[in-house]
Length: 82
Image (cartoon, rainbow, N blue to C red; front, top):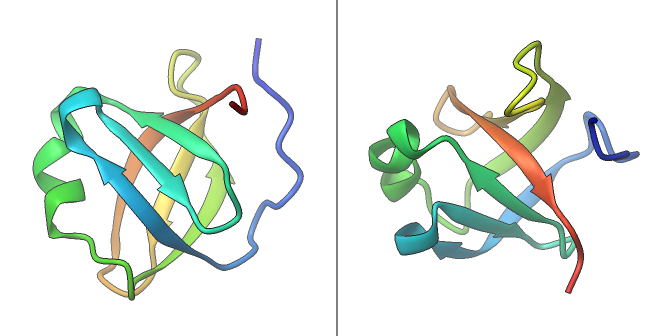
C-alpha cells in the first residue's frame, strides 16, 4: 500500500543523504528509501539541487524523486516519520 504524501510537485531540497542505507532526507523532513540501483545517481545530487516528488507506477517503489536541477530521477518509497 502506498503511503499518503500530499506535497506532490512541491519543490524540495536535500537535507541529508544516507547512501549506506539507500536513504535521502528532504528539507521538509520526509525520509525516502530509493532503489539501491540508483545509489550512483544519488551520489551526484547536492543540497542545492531542487527535487520534486511524483507518483510512480512501481508497486515496491511507488514514488519518483525528480532532481529538476540535474534532470535525473530515482524510484523511491516514503519511510515513516521518526
